[in-house]
Length: 291
Ligand SMILES: C[S@@+](CC[C@H](N)C(=O)[O-])C[C@H]1O[C@@H](n2cnc3c(N)ncnc32)[C@H](O)[C@@H]1O
Image (cartoon, rainbow, N blue to C red; front, side, top):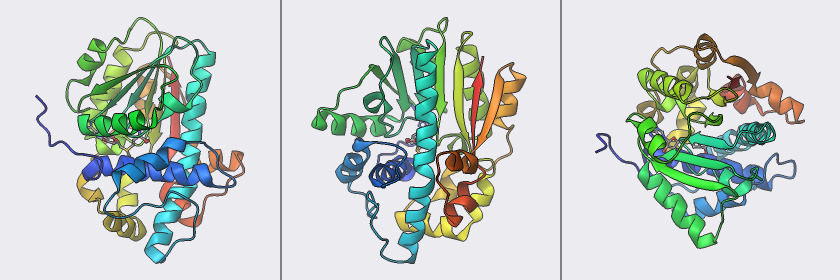
């Protein structure tokens, strides 16, 4: 039995999954958008969050909306596109297993053109996955791979649940931890990387969003205003305890690691991040590693 509080899609950390879905919707509808996620807007509409979230590139209504707006529209498309390409490259290289740790409302199973024979496991809290499945079923949205959901808390024995759901540790896997690490205490992050390592055959790879200094972001007045307006108690959700850099940790385990800094990735796609996004997320890094 899970010993933690469960959260749904409009409360606590579940609501953060809705916020990033809203960001993906905004990017989808930008003239210079970097991604296409038609499901993101549907999730937001179906959840009807207490504080409305923008899903289209329309002008903000007041100053705090403007901050929310900037936070969503600058960065989310960049990170989503980066990790979309990570999975596409894994497929080209013959990897047929993918695991999304804390999948939230990630609709890659439906959006991406997976290589034939790919199985994708999505791990998240039961209520988050149940909401997602309901909306996708209503839309008749079919997965373009063998999609399997694993409803478990990532602070519990998720590796056993993943094993039961059929992951083959002798075949290579592409893992993703996007928008996740600061929600985990240091020891859960350490256990997560160790479990990934243990189940990663040669040829496996992982992509991790490294927020680098989440404590600084939490202190930022604009970040605090926006979080309060949406109704998310971010200081209560995010862990600022000291922890090893995930890239260093993977390197110590023998993986070959690469870091791409968000502001540079964005520039490579012709996107200049707005000043607020640069301040909050510009130095975030997308860490990719291969084994
Ligand atoms: C900011 S959202 C990111 C979701 C998704 N990766 C994306 O980028 O759209 C954070 C997600 O982490 C999940 N999460 C956070 N802590 C978790 C835990 N301990 N166990 C399972 N899921 C967790 C939440 O339910 C939520 O879906």
